[in-house]
Image 1 (cartoon, rainbow, N blue to C red):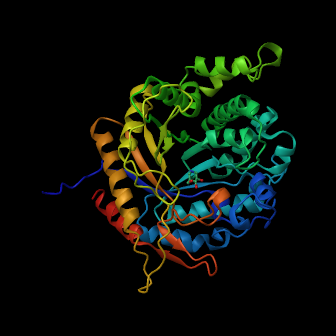
Image 2 (cartoon, rainbow, N blue to C red; image 1 turned 135 degrees about the horizontal axis):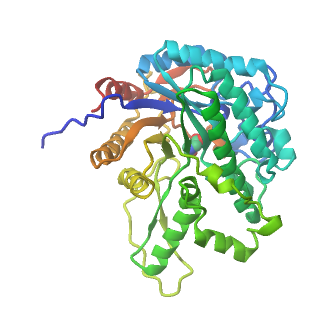
Length: 450
Ligand code: IFM
């Protein structure tokens, strides 16, 4: 069998992604305020092995070396998030210039290395004082987010043209409904109001970015899990559709001007979680703000979820699926990426799409030769890249791909037990070793294909 070379469109943006809390460390340095994640990790029993992001990859001090590493890998772009509590330690009001300077220096170094910065404004590290005032339950947090967006985009907007407002809003919603992630409010009734305030914060931030950044390209980075029925039964199909509505369409429909899905609103109304009239959280004009046109839709995608309605009497037996899983327990299902990209293009027609995160957690460590032979990650990426290529050939305007993650880092409630990096990190010494996958990726970038 002859192997065909897959070539991506000229100018395709190959990158890698990180998030502030997962790599920076320096949690209480240079005036940085406390975030909900600092509070969460410092509360006993929340994170595996009591790990914290206090030091993480020490990127706050090692950013120069990290940029050099990115340059050596030939990255065309780097997606990182700004820590809101470094910029406004109490969430709003007084600006911490040292925090602003950190990101300003980072941006300069990236540009000097020929790497395009893509900023995510919010990757879950809400300033704790805002949480104390209700966090995303409080509409005032929306105004605080607009203020933060204003400060950071005025400071960096002359050099940074690509901005993403929120990372995975659904995870934030889950962190109010449950107690797995900060702020761990654990009240299922809160999902709707948190959803709406996040979406409104996104919409207002889009306005601010358009005002402050000439030539801006603005988007958002929700996660998109494919929910697929475990059998051909109607019960499983219905449940899969419902989960798609709850975790995907809930955000996308309103972002693209269709309002919240009717079945979702009716469901929450029945439960009494969606008040209306004077008590309602959706105010006049909100939906228009949320639906502000976007330059791109970015999507974080890793795997699929097999849905089984075990409560349905007489349900069909589930189909057995092959199981090839990463260390997160997530199934390797590359075709899912093709399906997601195609669906998004078919249903919403975004101007452009990006994959803002995709990658795999595998624990391979340095071998006797000092190298990290992570063949499974190469295989994973090869298949997902091929799926993206198929989507492009089918007409999807995919502009770029950010591998999660540039380096191993703090994987939230799982601490340092999961390694998603292209670059291996020794957390004792902070030594970095590019894995085989990083070297393979360098070649893919250089050849714009494989
Ligand atoms: O590490 C996370 C990231 O912060 C958000 N998306 C999923 C990744 C892997 O779990």
